[in-house]
Length: 471
Ligand SMILES: *Cc1c(COP(=O)(O)O)cnc(C)c1O
Image (cartoon, rainbow, N blue to C red):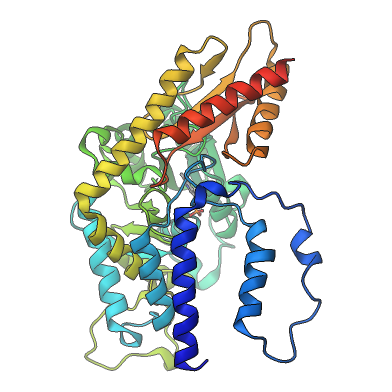
């Protein structure tokens, strides 16, 4: 593509993107596509001859956009709402333009050093002590996999050479509310699904540290090898937080690696009055937090903070001749801290975000989201036929419609129907979860464009849908 042509399309796209972000309210949040819709409209084969950009773009607008669920939409309340902010998008544009592969320091010194520096800024903002070193991975799933691989390496140092065929079966512990990525990591690491022992939770969905202690002792008495415990701060269902101090005690007594999963809630640690659940996380062996969730950075960007980077490196480092650096080049090679060799320049967008908003600007927005969520929770609490399923420590509310004289299974069906009805309007998008086997709805605030009017509208839609379903 010739430079003049590139400039023309780049300018057109910059226009389109800014209008899109401005007019998001007009799009249906949840895509109305049915399975196969897009593929049915695409040719079977890639074009033999190149096509003009205007045709590619018009297909993007006409074919691709209808299949987009708008995560940027101010009424996206499902899962954990995220935001790709302006500065984040600009950073991502530059990263794509530079197209560097930051596998070694020398393959782009600035990409490595900015990653080290900006994750250190983040560490300080989160209130974690020196001694944690940051590395950016694509997702929390990968960050937790890397952390647990390091834990496995510490527990079974010989496994790197021999595989996991000798020695006792390893065990990882996490609460029944931990994210499924932990189980996936345990399976991927060859410990088997039986290698994850799910610890029961209390009435507020927090890990029961006594049950953890009993489970570890039980496994030890059966000749198993406890490897790691994963504590979640901000669980995916209810945003509950496991009690770190007693978990830490069990971990240190039995030599377990303590990994903290704060993929969503970590952002709240930047706000002093929201920091209570994080007390003690400075004692963890590793912490994961996703700036691509509640820190205004476009997907993907997950920060793994490592207290023992040397163990992570020992677990992963393999340097073939063609990747050897020159003698005297004493620098971090990021390929040593994870599965992938190649890596995108993700630090750039995070650097843009932290600088553009500033710590104070970030804190203000996190506070505003928490306030919106708590305002919604107050509405639910005040409404006679609705109830809340869990406290609201962050920006996510778990609630359900509970009209009098409805049994639990009717109530489950009713809530799914209410949610589907709201989601079909295209005006808001919510998701659901299960607590003690029952269906609950979730409303999560995390988007920079979300105003009180959007939350109010979602509440109106929910009550209207509930009325319709009760007829
Ligand atoms: C979202 C989430 C994850 C998974 O995040 P990915 O980056 O999508 O892998 C893991 N743990 C918790 C607590 C989460 O909220």
